[in-house]
Amino acid sequence: MKTYLQHTKKFWNIRVGSDEFAVHYGKLGTIGKVQIKYFESDGICRKEADKLIRQKLRKGYVETDTDWDDLIYVDDPEVGPNRLTTHPRFNAHFQEDFYLDCTDEYSPFGSDEGADVLVMFEDAIRKERDIDFLVGAYDIVSGWMERDVSSPDDWVTYEYGFDCDVAVMSSAFASIKLTGHLDVSLQEEGVAALDRLIQQVEPEDRPRFKLMSVQLSSFPTSI
Image (cartoon, rainbow, N blue to C red; front, side, top):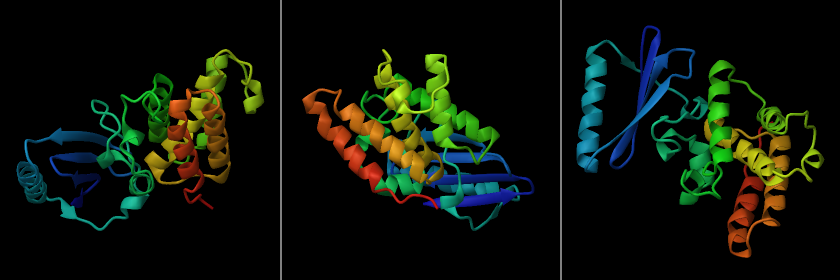
Protein backbone atom coordinates (compact mmCIF):
# COMPACT_ATOMS: atom_id res chain seq x y z
CA MET A 1 0.00 0.00 0.00
CA LYS A 2 1.19 3.50 -0.87
CA THR A 3 -0.48 6.77 0.07
CA TYR A 4 0.69 10.28 -0.85
CA LEU A 5 -0.71 13.36 0.96
CA GLN A 6 -0.12 17.10 0.66
CA HIS A 7 -0.96 20.08 2.85
CA THR A 8 -0.14 23.66 1.79
CA LYS A 9 3.66 23.52 1.42
CA LYS A 10 4.26 20.07 2.90
CA PHE A 11 4.09 16.48 1.71
CA TRP A 12 3.73 13.22 3.57
CA ASN A 13 3.62 9.72 2.18
CA ILE A 14 3.67 6.20 3.53
CA ARG A 15 4.77 2.93 1.94
CA VAL A 16 3.57 -0.15 3.75
CA GLY A 17 5.29 -3.52 3.64
CA SER A 18 4.38 -6.66 5.56
CA ASP A 19 5.45 -5.84 9.12
CA GLU A 20 7.07 -2.46 8.48
CA PHE A 21 6.31 0.87 6.85
CA ALA A 22 8.31 3.86 5.68
CA VAL A 23 7.08 7.40 6.31
CA HIS A 24 8.51 10.07 4.01
CA TYR A 25 7.81 13.74 4.79
CA GLY A 26 9.07 17.28 4.30
CA LYS A 27 8.56 20.57 2.50
CA LEU A 28 7.45 20.47 -1.11
CA GLY A 29 10.43 20.87 -3.41
CA THR A 30 12.81 19.13 -0.99
CA ILE A 31 13.88 15.50 -0.69
CA GLY A 32 12.53 15.32 2.85
CA LYS A 33 13.22 12.76 5.55
CA VAL A 34 12.40 9.07 5.89
CA GLN A 35 11.66 6.95 8.93
CA ILE A 36 11.01 3.20 9.01
CA LYS A 37 8.97 1.58 11.77
CA TYR A 38 8.70 -2.15 12.51
CA PHE A 39 5.81 -4.07 14.03
CA GLU A 40 5.10 -7.52 15.42
CA SER A 41 2.71 -8.47 12.60
CA ASP A 42 1.35 -7.28 9.28
CA GLY A 43 -2.03 -6.67 10.91
CA ILE A 44 -0.58 -4.31 13.52
CA CYS A 45 1.51 -2.61 10.84
CA ARG A 46 -1.50 -1.93 8.59
CA LYS A 47 -3.59 -0.75 11.55
CA GLU A 48 -0.93 1.78 12.58
CA ALA A 49 -0.48 2.95 8.99
CA ASP A 50 -4.24 3.54 8.60
CA LYS A 51 -4.24 5.43 11.92
CA LEU A 52 -1.47 7.77 10.73
CA ILE A 53 -3.29 8.43 7.46
CA ARG A 54 -6.50 9.33 9.31
CA GLN A 55 -4.57 11.67 11.58
CA LYS A 56 -3.03 13.47 8.61
CA LEU A 57 -6.38 13.80 6.86
CA ARG A 58 -7.90 15.34 10.00
CA LYS A 59 -5.07 17.89 10.00
CA GLY A 60 -6.02 19.03 6.50
CA TYR A 61 -3.77 16.89 4.35
CA VAL A 62 -5.30 15.81 1.05
CA GLU A 63 -4.61 12.58 -0.79
CA THR A 64 -2.91 13.42 -4.08
CA ASP A 65 -2.02 11.40 -7.14
CA THR A 66 1.72 11.20 -7.64
CA ASP A 67 4.15 9.51 -9.97
CA TRP A 68 5.99 7.22 -7.56
CA ASP A 69 8.69 6.67 -10.17
CA ASP A 70 9.45 10.40 -10.16
CA LEU A 71 10.34 10.52 -6.45
CA ILE A 72 13.84 10.39 -5.00
CA TYR A 73 14.25 7.42 -2.67
CA VAL A 74 16.53 8.06 0.31
CA ASP A 75 16.98 5.81 3.33
CA ASP A 76 16.24 6.10 7.00
CA PRO A 77 19.78 6.86 8.29
CA GLU A 78 19.17 4.60 11.29
CA VAL A 79 18.22 1.63 9.09
CA GLY A 80 20.11 1.99 5.82
CA PRO A 81 19.11 0.39 2.51
CA ASN A 82 15.62 -1.10 2.52
CA ARG A 83 13.15 -2.15 -0.17
CA LEU A 84 10.62 0.42 1.04
CA THR A 85 13.14 3.24 0.63
CA THR A 86 14.43 2.11 -2.76
CA HIS A 87 13.20 3.16 -6.20
CA PRO A 88 10.58 0.78 -7.66
CA ARG A 89 12.68 0.26 -10.81
CA PHE A 90 15.59 -0.97 -8.69
CA ASN A 91 13.33 -3.33 -6.76
CA ALA A 92 11.83 -4.73 -9.94
CA HIS A 93 15.15 -5.36 -11.68
CA PHE A 94 17.46 -6.35 -8.80
CA GLN A 95 15.39 -8.79 -6.78
CA GLU A 96 18.07 -10.82 -5.01
CA ASP A 97 18.24 -10.09 -1.28
CA PHE A 98 21.97 -9.30 -1.27
CA TYR A 99 21.56 -6.10 -3.29
CA LEU A 100 20.35 -4.11 -0.27
CA ASP A 101 22.18 -6.09 2.41
CA CYS A 102 24.35 -3.56 4.22
CA THR A 103 26.13 -6.35 6.12
CA ASP A 104 27.31 -8.13 2.95
CA GLU A 105 30.82 -7.00 2.00
CA TYR A 106 30.21 -7.91 -1.65
CA SER A 107 26.86 -6.18 -2.06
CA PRO A 108 26.75 -2.75 -3.79
CA PHE A 109 26.40 -0.88 -0.47
CA GLY A 110 27.67 -3.45 2.05
CA SER A 111 31.35 -2.56 2.09
CA ASP A 112 32.66 0.57 3.78
CA GLU A 113 33.36 2.05 0.33
CA GLY A 114 29.94 1.19 -1.07
CA ALA A 115 28.15 2.52 2.00
CA ASP A 116 30.14 5.76 1.84
CA VAL A 117 29.29 6.18 -1.84
CA LEU A 118 25.56 5.84 -1.18
CA VAL A 119 25.63 8.30 1.72
CA MET A 120 27.66 10.80 -0.33
CA PHE A 121 25.15 10.68 -3.17
CA GLU A 122 22.20 10.96 -0.79
CA ASP A 123 23.77 14.11 0.65
CA ALA A 124 24.55 15.47 -2.83
CA ILE A 125 21.09 14.85 -4.25
CA ARG A 126 19.51 16.79 -1.41
CA LYS A 127 21.35 19.88 -2.69
CA GLU A 128 21.04 19.25 -6.43
CA ARG A 129 18.58 16.74 -7.81
CA ASP A 130 20.09 16.48 -11.29
CA ILE A 131 23.54 15.23 -10.38
CA ASP A 132 25.93 13.36 -12.63
CA PHE A 133 26.66 10.09 -10.85
CA LEU A 134 29.64 9.21 -13.05
CA VAL A 135 31.29 12.57 -12.37
CA GLY A 136 30.49 12.04 -8.71
CA ALA A 137 32.11 8.59 -8.77
CA TYR A 138 35.30 10.01 -10.26
CA ASP A 139 35.26 12.85 -7.73
CA ILE A 140 35.06 10.29 -4.92
CA VAL A 141 37.97 8.30 -6.31
CA SER A 142 39.96 11.49 -6.91
CA GLY A 143 39.46 12.41 -3.27
CA TRP A 144 40.69 9.02 -2.13
CA MET A 145 43.77 9.18 -4.37
CA GLU A 146 44.36 12.88 -3.72
CA ARG A 147 44.80 13.61 -7.43
CA ASP A 148 42.58 14.06 -10.48
CA VAL A 149 41.23 10.88 -12.05
CA SER A 150 39.94 10.72 -15.62
CA SER A 151 39.80 6.97 -16.36
CA PRO A 152 40.28 3.55 -14.73
CA ASP A 153 43.85 3.61 -16.07
CA ASP A 154 44.59 6.14 -13.35
CA TRP A 155 44.01 3.62 -10.58
CA VAL A 156 44.88 0.29 -12.20
CA THR A 157 48.22 0.15 -10.34
CA TYR A 158 46.95 2.00 -7.26
CA GLU A 159 47.26 0.12 -3.97
CA TYR A 160 43.54 0.51 -3.39
CA GLY A 161 42.43 0.04 -6.98
CA PHE A 162 39.90 -2.58 -5.89
CA ASP A 163 38.17 0.02 -3.71
CA CYS A 164 38.09 2.46 -6.63
CA ASP A 165 36.31 -0.10 -8.80
CA VAL A 166 33.86 -0.72 -5.96
CA ALA A 167 33.16 3.02 -5.83
CA VAL A 168 32.34 3.16 -9.55
CA MET A 169 30.22 0.02 -9.39
CA SER A 170 28.35 1.29 -6.31
CA SER A 171 27.74 4.64 -7.98
CA ALA A 172 25.90 2.92 -10.82
CA PHE A 173 23.66 1.07 -8.38
CA ALA A 174 23.20 4.22 -6.27
CA SER A 175 21.93 6.09 -9.32
CA ILE A 176 19.23 3.47 -9.86
CA LYS A 177 18.39 3.08 -6.18
CA LEU A 178 17.89 6.81 -5.62
CA THR A 179 16.42 7.95 -8.94
CA GLY A 180 15.46 4.88 -10.98
CA HIS A 181 17.68 6.11 -13.82
CA LEU A 182 21.02 5.02 -15.25
CA ASP A 183 23.03 6.84 -17.89
CA VAL A 184 24.66 4.79 -20.63
CA SER A 185 28.14 6.03 -19.74
CA LEU A 186 27.72 5.13 -16.08
CA GLN A 187 26.33 1.73 -17.02
CA GLU A 188 29.38 1.03 -19.19
CA GLU A 189 31.80 2.14 -16.46
CA GLY A 190 29.92 0.21 -13.78
CA VAL A 191 29.92 -3.01 -15.80
CA ALA A 192 33.61 -2.57 -16.64
CA ALA A 193 34.38 -2.09 -12.94
CA LEU A 194 32.45 -5.26 -12.08
CA ASP A 195 34.31 -7.19 -14.75
CA ARG A 196 37.62 -6.07 -13.24
CA LEU A 197 36.42 -7.00 -9.78
CA ILE A 198 35.53 -10.49 -11.01
CA GLN A 199 39.20 -11.07 -11.76
CA GLN A 200 40.25 -10.02 -8.26
CA VAL A 201 37.86 -11.88 -5.96
CA GLU A 202 38.04 -15.50 -4.87
CA PRO A 203 36.60 -18.06 -7.34
CA GLU A 204 33.66 -18.81 -5.05
CA ASP A 205 32.65 -15.14 -5.08
CA ARG A 206 32.81 -14.65 -8.85
CA PRO A 207 29.25 -15.84 -9.61
CA ARG A 208 27.92 -12.97 -7.49
CA PHE A 209 29.88 -10.36 -9.43
CA LYS A 210 29.02 -11.97 -12.76
CA LEU A 211 25.33 -11.79 -11.86
CA MET A 212 25.63 -8.12 -10.91
CA SER A 213 27.45 -7.42 -14.18
CA VAL A 214 24.78 -9.15 -16.27
CA GLN A 215 21.90 -7.49 -14.44
CA LEU A 216 23.47 -4.04 -14.47
CA SER A 217 24.20 -4.31 -18.20
CA SER A 218 20.55 -5.24 -18.87
CA PHE A 219 19.02 -2.37 -16.91
CA PRO A 220 17.22 0.06 -19.29
CA THR A 221 19.31 3.22 -19.58
CA SER A 222 18.06 6.79 -19.63
CA ILE A 223 17.94 8.74 -22.87
